[in-house]
Length: 388
Ligand code: FEO
Image (spheres, rainbow, N blue to C red):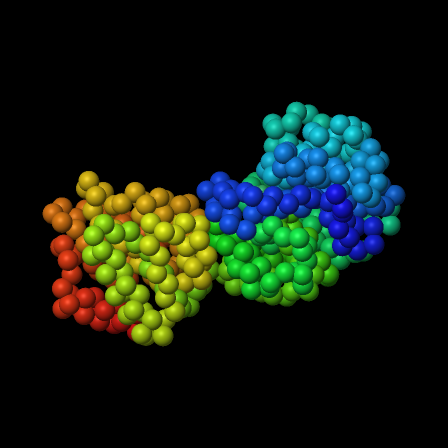
């Protein structure tokens, strides 16, 4: 298999995972890829590896450029196994390669996964010379594991960013000017929302550190490499991590006999008629990881559930549990639903919305059986008054 050239002597040697459709509960309809990078210098350097089942693909791409036995240095930006899984396989070719990783979490994490390979821990401000080029390290803890770091090559102006700026997007095109930009940005948004949303403050801090760097290329370890739209991806990361959406509404629900659905549609219409862009998601037909990107950029969130066995619907519970883990905060929220006799679900939904860190902006909407036209008019007016 072929390597892909980024600049003279620098190559993508990763693997494309076309058929993965679930990544820890994240629905990966576009597949993904695992980015590993080879730098040919006085010291041959490999930055990150790939998921273990793709080791042979990576080794084949490395072999397109040089024998893997000649690798002198391996940089591990991240312990998670989609990037370190092929470390044992490549190390069989180059057992004496020096392995640099973050201090102390990277060294500890790699040892726990693969045993003691004599890791060389580095921290922010450390750099190594590999010949004509230098590699500098910036620790990015909790983006999204404690060990994460990024590697910057100042002579080439390339940031090897690992998970940051990535997307789950399999493609034969490797660069942002070789794929459809709106799709790429949508996938970057989905990736940010589902993986990085809870770490906005840390991303803002890292953003400040990276501001001082001259960057020609951002080479992440998932998806497409940024070289023509760097300003766009940095700008949206700045917006997303600021976590201050000023408009937009997301209405999410499940329904048994359509009453909660009718309320949901009325709420959605009330927002839209007020020029607040609104989206409606039935949890029976939408994957929760596809709803999160809309939550990321929306000011309002309304969640509805009928009552089933004194509880909210399991689909709604799963969505709210997932959302709570992503800690979105800083949004206006309310609960709604139809019920038959006990109707506990609506209050339970409201409590979960509070646990997400949202401000409850409206009394919960709790309708017995089927909402009348008059009730729907009242809901419509209340939503409009609340969001004026
Ligand atoms: Fe793509 Fe955190 O690994």
